[in-house]
Length: 531
Image (cartoon, rainbow, N blue to C red; front, side, top):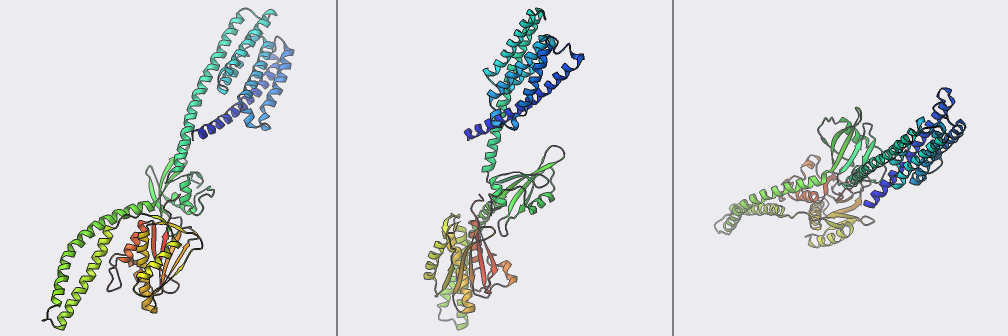
């Protein structure tokens, strides 16, 4: 990660150097036209080109043409070439030579053109680092002294000009070193900021929670991989430029001040809802961007379910234990009473009723205790096709009647994460119910099991279909409630426990009427992780 971060930063720094050099070239073109205007205007003749007008004229023309060519060269030359420090050194050296010739033709340091060299060597300190950068003020200082010696022998200046040239040379070095130091500090700070930015990006991309930043027009500024997976589970690698319209409508309708707002959003029907936390980010001006965090509610629901089951299990186990002891005494007393020779047929019938209900209540207590003793789900990777083959074989052997279980397998391999013991319990309960209700209507113990993958969401499913009378619409809402049953001998805990086991394994058990007017129980297996 460190190597890639340094490479990315160096690439960014090279682009900045290329941009800075291009801006400096535009500045050189500007001052070239300025010198040309001052030279043409006779009112400024004593300031520029006063000593040698011909040299000034030739130099300024060449200087202007060279600056125009260099200034527009990035249009035809790659940025990688112009970003090289050697290119910057050559350009700045030629600039120093050109300005020195203009200064010589105008009377040396007395003309004031030497001040333009200060900016050049200072800019060199910000653009190039190290000894090669310090060589530029040295070149400028040597040329300045040479010009003063040249003008001195021509009787065009006085001895005090050498002192001014020395002061100007010191300013060259000080400005270059100062800007080198300042540039290094900015470079170091920029490197730290860039590294932190890269680390933050990696952390955001690795987060299990989805993160997205969107403006008021619905355009995405940032979204991590987990956010893509949650919003578009069917195609998480697709390019996203905006949030879905229904999600953006919820964002717009959610009023937030400085507080966070949370709402739910479902990407696919029957899929677990996403918990979306919305915060407003104030940007420049009055515009506000929206920061959204997406949380998969499956894990939250699972933890809440485990807490609920743990509390319910402890309470139920305590109640069942208290009931079981007197119930055993009642059952034993009824059994002894039924063995009495003095009972008539009516009393014996009442005794049998007591014993039957004791057996039924004992079965309820056993189911409650089983629920309270149930261990936490331990999901494993299961191939549904292979699992159903073994399940049907074992179930058919243990079933009291001859049964027919038709399985429609998925053409390819279909793997789900589910506790095998829990899945056997759920399928066993659904198949027992289906076979019983099919036999009541058709006289044949028959169910059908279908395995497949949802087209829209891409999640696996398993459906158990019977051929019974189905469940009336007014009773469907009570199907998964504990202790609810339409049978006189049922406990009403089978479907409830099956639903709880599915939810503990990140799956959903639902009911619908089948096409053959029977019952259809649908298990949807959601992925154990969103990405």
